[in-house]
Length: 148
Image (cartoon, rainbow, N blue to C red; front, side, top):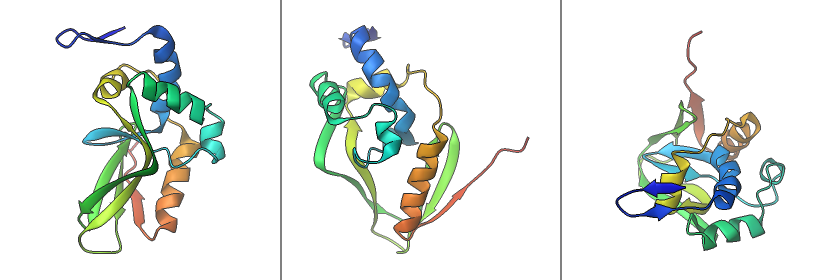
C-alpha cells in the first residue's frame, strides 16, 4: 500500500493487517496516540496485542516502542482527547506542569499515515479501561455525549 506519493512511503499488506487491530487503541490529541499501557491487561490480549506483534510493527517502522514508556509533559489544568470522535476532558489535580502517561507505544510518521486509512471500530471496553485508569490516578474525567 502506497501511503505517500511524495515520500514513496509504503507498507506491505501483511503489515497493514497486523497494524489495523492496534488502531482501536488510538486516542487523538493533535496527533494519534495509541494508549498501550502494558501487555498484561485483558483488553489488549483479547485483540492480539502482544510483544512479538509490537516488535514486528517496530521493525516495520510503524511504531516506536519503549519499555519505560512515554509521557506528555507540561499540561495545564485541563486537556481534551478524542476517542473515535468522542471528546473526553481530563482535569488534573494540579494547576500546571501536569503530565499524561501515554503508555509504551508511539506511532512513527509512517504509522501516523497508515492510521488514517485503518478501518476499525471503537472498543468500549478499552475506552472504559482508560477512563478508569485516569480516575485511579486522581484525574477528573468527563465525556460529552451527542444528543440523539
